[in-house]
Length: 298
Image (cartoon, rainbow, N blue to C red; front, side, top):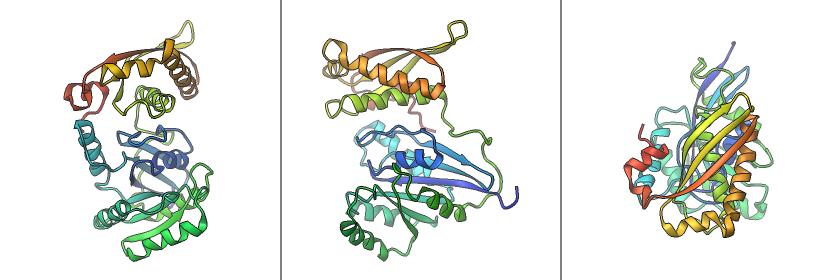
């Protein structure tokens, strides 16, 4: 391919800045789960966009937080690993909430890594121009920022312009992944994440972030033409179990229904989904359970 370019772009930012929504919009596929709650993303997720001119490998990362347990430590390490040896760092800032001191500190942090730093201001479709413009002016003091894009991932506004702008920072000419790949994550991983997403959405603010998913079985029945999936929902305390289940099992049924619909869309096939709630006290500080759920140090 003539003038074909490729490379890796790390997507970083504070919790709930819109990183995962942006990733899904950039590659035009749902790879990262999305919820209004902080710490929805726990692992680095690759989203791969390939066309005739380039292959962009986007690395979605957890929101920057101060770790409070072993899972938090894992998430912090995930971010640090993601920004090593990339061609560009894309810092995502929530334009609706304004540019905070913490985000200014992230600009300083990533601006010193000798890697091109591009800023994407998200949620501009719901931000008032008269409040957004003074906030954007705060970024003028940073010479380390190469470019600033105002975007709306939900409305797909300026996404193509952002992708076109990022191309100039790609250094390689080789294709790192097969043309048809859209992520490095397995179907099993995405199934677990879709179940966790529905828990975050269905349980509103009641349920803490101490929820993990362990996949017991994922098999395709060739005769019945259906996926048979069995998974455990892991919670940290006995008091969390009835919150997941809901009155007379209403909540777990809703979680299962929504998860099954999303999994069927992803697999393009019928799905039988069985969910079980298991209590593992303080699993987020238990190395064995972190490993069991899939949060393994690379």
